[in-house]
Each structure stands twice: as C-alpha cells, then as structure tokens.
Amino acid sequence: MCEHLLCLYSMVSDQTFLYNDTFPVFINNFGEADVILFGLGMDNVEKVECVKELIKLPINTLNIVSPTPLHEFSDLKIKYVDWDFHINVDRFDFNLKGSLYKNIRYRLRQAEKMGYHTRLTKEFTSNHIYILSRHLTQHKFDVWDYEELLSLDKFFREHDHGMIMEAYRGDRLVGFDIIDFLEDNKIMVVPLGIYLESSLTSDFLMYTNLKFARDNGYEWVDVGPACGSAGLRSFKEKWFATPKFKLIVQTLKVKSTQ
Image (cartoon, rainbow, N blue to C red; front, side):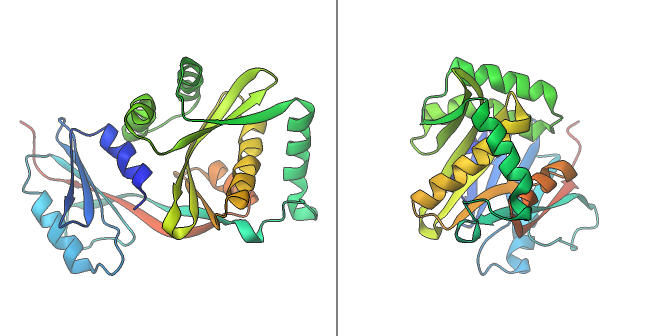
C-alpha cells in the first residue's frame, strides 16, 4: 500500500497501527475503524482473522477495503465496488495524434490559449486552502473524503514526501493535484485533484502529470478510483486509464455505542 495514502489516512484517525505487520488499521474517537486488507500473498483466512480481532475493539462500525468480498460475516454489507485506475506512460502518445486524442487535443489547445502554466511545490498555502474550500462546496463527498481533504495542510507540514502540481491561468492559481511516488514500482500516484475551474484544469494537469512521469522515468501513473462517479470514470478512461485493482468497500456494524 502506498505510503502517501497511509499518511493521509493517519491524519484523520486517532490511532493507527499495522495488524500482524500487514494490514493498516485506522481508528477514530467516534467508534469507527477502517482496515485495508490488501497484501501480496495474503489469503482470505488471514483477512478473516484480522476482522475477527478488530471487532473485539470498542467500536461500532468497521469499514473494510479489500480486493474480494468477505462472505464469512452475515452482517457485512457492501458499500460500493470500485477500481483503482492506472495509465501506462509508455503507451500514451504525447503527440496526441489520431481521433482517440481529439477531445484531449482540443482542451489542451484551449488551455494554452488561456495562458495555463504549471508549477511544482511542497508549500501548502492559503491559496490552496481557498481553492480547497470552493472545491468542497461544489462536490458531494462522504465523511471520510472530507476529513482526508481537510487534512492536507497537516500532511504537508508533517511529512517530507508528496508534492503539489499547481495549475495557473495567467497569474491566478486555479487548481492543483497532489502527487507522490512509489519508487520501487516506478509508479507516480495522483490521488487527489482540487480545482477551481475544472473543465480545462483537470485535463491540463493530467497531461502535465503524464509528462512529468515520463521525464522522470515512471512507467505508470496511478490516478485513483472512480469513487462511484460515471463522469469521473469517463474522464479517466478518456486519458486511457485502465482498471488495475478492484476495491470492494464493506461495512460491518459491530455494536451500539450506547
């Protein structure tokens, strides 16, 4: 599991630990716990044992993210099924030739005419907070997503990895992506995009991210899940992203907090 994701999760939890040195667990003071049941070579028995141990904790809800459903618990409900999307950098045509790149060509030309340019930084400022606040009012998120986004200031203050790919229209900051790197696997991760003007900014930043990945030797760009949004999935697929990892989010009601 990517370090940036674990750090972001830890920002919005009150307790973080690894179960059996394998599965990350995050607990908050409101009686909720989250566990990520991904791991190479891990079988279902180990995952079930992990859940059995976690439900002994003083919590009322356990949220489980895994590549397959767990059928061993009758009260376990599937919240949603998603995919983590990746773009193969080597197969992307940076010359944007052909009909498949028509929409991308048009949007990038529009961005160029409007004076879009980019900057890479590690400093999270009041300008980023301003855009983040506007972004939050325009989109509907679940509670966990809100907490994760609101933790970005703390994330950049407390960790030395992760960077911000900014998009400017003239002198005005109009959006930014959070990027991070999985060096051993040659993967550049783009887990979060926050935009003031999303129509062109998202396309401009996607192309910028892909060029940065290519120029720095990364073979894949992980652009994250579709979050149940048909529009977001369509956007990722327009950029030739393909589903790489299946994500099944299940919820288990453990006990009452009364």
